[in-house]
View 1 (cartoon, helix red, strand yellow):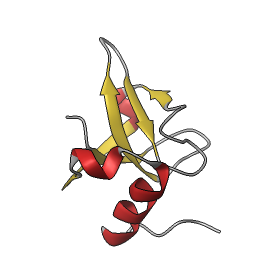
View 2 (cartoon, one colour):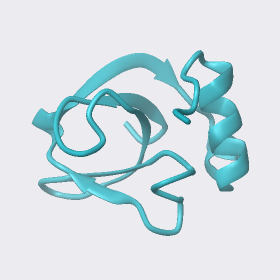
View 3 (spheres, one colour):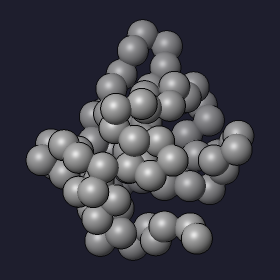
Length: 80
């Protein structure tokens, strides 16, 4: 499931696209490369995330810049 693009369904980041970077027993760690960089992912309950069919490759998750570019290329623009 790591690398899957998800949409947040609740919280301050509602309707925002993020990527799963790690799975724990009860939570998923997600980041977007901007407010939530790869170095400091957000812990989210899986029921608060909407899974999409998009999946990013491992090399697209290495840096914040490549992560933001990959999300933009998938059609998820950054909010200003």
